[in-house]
Image (cartoon, rainbow, N blue to C red; front, side, top):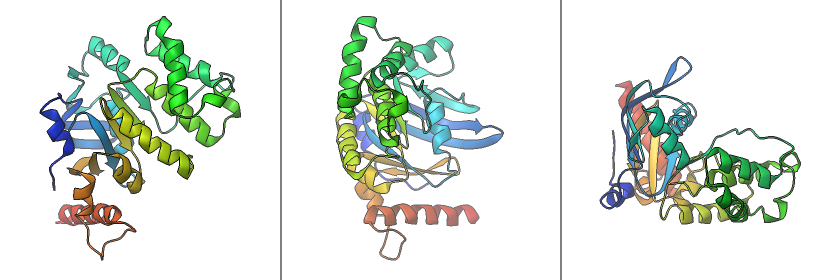
Length: 267
């Protein structure tokens, strides 16, 4: 595995790992989608990159405690995910936006985010203010009392982000959060990520390398269920050369990493 110095490792000298996986294996149906992955992340914004089928969504679902590990060790926020009592305490401190999320169409945005806050066992008295703050942060203030079924795709995605951050999570997991957002909304989202990453561990799975470079302190590249590389955005850009595929230094670095990993796997 190719590896550069990670910004998360510097943070770990002050903060414990929010995510710590050793030889993690996770199944997606019968397929072993995460196969022997080692990962350690702390405070900051971490971008998760990898081609289709690399295991990104399965990994995110395991970190969100939706899928149970098939093997290896997984610790979240200092707690093993093996015990039911630990799972409950971890879930209270989690924020999770899946790639496809469900909702009650007749709920308003405020009701939807409030319902998710209740599911996270937030104190009843704290929920109204927390909901308003989350809705404001994603730019849906004017739509707070609109029904979910009336929202555009981009607005639905922002409502999904609002429910993920309503409890001020210590660990925030976002799977393709910018799908449906226009360029201006993506810029606002990057700023929100930088704000959230000051005191939380944020992991963002995406195909958009430019979003990772603009908003993340750390980059994680996975393929075939394993960690290929981890390092800073600048270090990612340094992996590529002019002849590599991509329209930016970071994209060329990303494609170069995958090409080298595939060549090593073929030997």
